[in-house]
Length: 274
Picture (cartoon, rainbow, N blue to C red):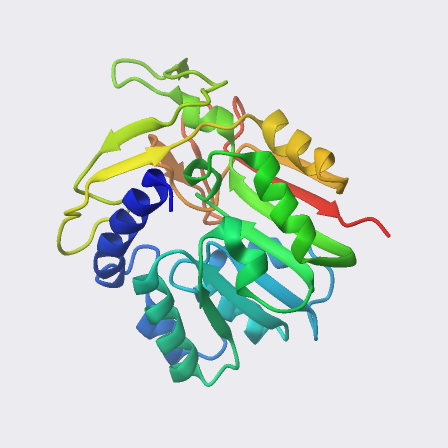
């Protein structure tokens, strides 16, 4: 196991109780109690995906599993996979409490092919995942190995440009705050808090993260032999990103002073060509 994987895994294990104590982004009890509830992310993405009824879908890096379970509620045969044992335990418990026949697998994403059986109609990833992975080409190879011929890969993610921009407190202009093109070497971060507030702190505070450009993502998919079928960029996001954003009446987030000036989110779809 690489040092970055074990370090990041320990960090995410510490995040689980914090996220469970918060109702900002994860409210597992409310999700279990309401059989009609579909996660905000899946509400957005399912409108851009084919009919999910009976489709076999694997959600890579699924964290607490609410998106995976949402797909099951929409009729899919859903499997979730995550490298955090603590996350998988919570997701499995939620599946049992909802009565949904959904499997959760404990595995690093790069080992996903060895961790699950059979091929999938859809491989799905969403929001805040790519920055934890060093190699987009290797990820794309894993995705291709999991897909049936003609199967679909769907990714919704924070736009890499948004990760490089900020609005300083002294003005309302967007400014470049970090290198958009990133580096092969990870950024080492130290923080005792997560991206949402909750009870407790992160004891394993070190993380390794990478910046990937949009071309890194697309080129990785093409190099693996996948066929790009859609790429969309949006000046709003499903969730706040730690930037100074404002919530729109429709529930999405945008730059309040410059709402159409820069992208905050993108989706990409690719098929395992027949």
